[in-house]
Amino acid sequence: MIGAWHGWLIKARSFDWINLDIRSDGSFELSGEWGIRSSGILIVRDATVRFEGSRAWRGTLVLNSGPAGPLLKREHDNRTERATLHRKTRPADDPRRAVQGGPAALLDSVRMPR
Image (cartoon, rainbow, N blue to C red; front, side, top):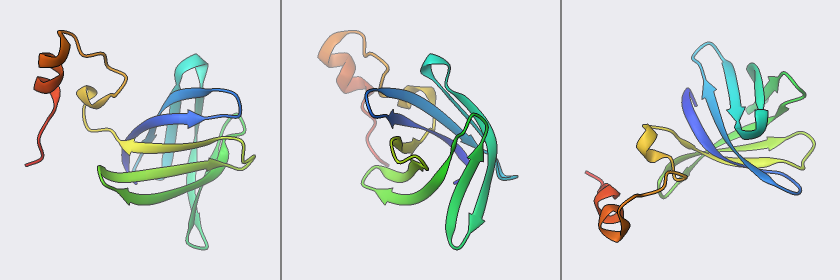
């Protein structure tokens, strides 16, 4: 789980792009659009990873695998917010990034697996 993750936070009536940085000491920093900010610690208890953060950010994290690589599922204790985060490898991986130059540029931006 250590590393940088990003994805959509789904709320009851909206959604926000968030970044989650998990450090090797078990601490985390969460940031997002519209002033979303939190920091805290991860706690492993009964085979469950919990996050305990500032501004009432509390819930669980589950590491899964998906077709495109590891996924981190996040669910808030209030059950009204959830997120599926993907490992962030470099700025070009941000799916919100607009591709300039039309279809040819889009094809050039696709990276084939090695």
